Image 1 (spheres, helix red, strand yellow):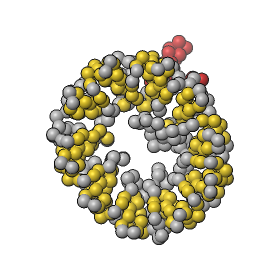
Image 2 (tube, helix red, strand yellow):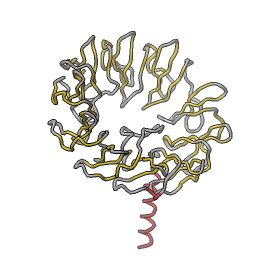
Image 3 (cartoon, helix red, strand yellow):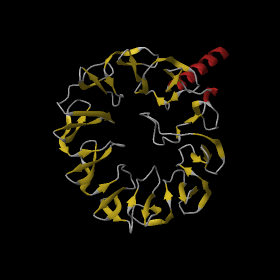
Image 4 (tube, one colour):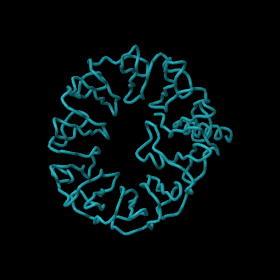
Length: 374
């Protein structure tokens, strides 16, 4: 019985680790590690990309193909350029033509267009005659090209422009916010999205444009916070969906609320306040980013480290942080991606857990965030 339980536990742990892999480079070659710090695919590629939907693009010779999580070829290297899989399809360049393929390599039959864009959550943008339309995963048009511009879809919504006016659409092409704004935020939220009409900035919420008195800039709502930051007379404060100043603009800079705290700065000193505007973590850092879901936030002294919501230093300020080039880095690129943070020291790139421990006690020439294999 003990042997069976041991085997079962080993299998479960292996399966768990196999669900997320990270691209790393060592001695000039790329490979992939799991969250135990072990190589699942040993370094052997001169060029490679992170996994997306269970496949990773790697180069052999001068051609690109895709491997699976065991390192075997899922699609032989026969493409000149490749992008990432999303919604079951990836864009590839072959014989000077871009087209979509599925995971078997089958080409998706699509309308002729001047330019194709990656699928995101089941919809792709295509451009024809300087107009942008929406394409579905069946290769058929969801909406014929009729926009001058459509930005990246985020959680099923995208800002779009008709003529000189901005609005917002969903992935079916339905207008969610009418095209009557000079400027609009790019992230749709249950709390609203900022917009600009003429000289007035405000929050678009429940079909209303709630003007924020005196505001000359507003940022996107973040996560589950009902407050976002806005600027007035070169000072920053926080407003709600109704366009009301909840925290008066008294700070030189600010960032979004997360875990009940927001980074703010006066002069060159950063700290954190609560939704009542009270200072919870003293303004003492050279810079600070928002808290990740796990309750840790990057702060900078000479270099970067991480504190918890009580202000305790969990990872010392000895490292560099960056958003990097990863496709699937998550919402908080400069902080933790799940339970792992990617940091740089003089020794190279490494991964740290929430206890501040270096994964595998190892550094790499390059490292990209862990990616879920599903």
